[in-house]
Length: 77
Image (cartoon, rainbow, N blue to C red):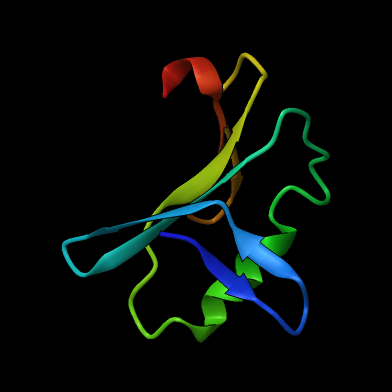
């Protein structure tokens, strides 16, 4: 499942719909921590509860980034 905000050209790479919640994820080879979650506001248009999510990247560590969002190494997926 993918969501896109056509007005602002923002999208989420994939969403997991499980047990009445949406779990959002972006995939980036390289990430800039100040811009890592810039597209997550596209979720404001969804009328379902949002669960934990994250940005899957090529790094080595799991890093808590924001409330409910993590930086997740791709090797763990």
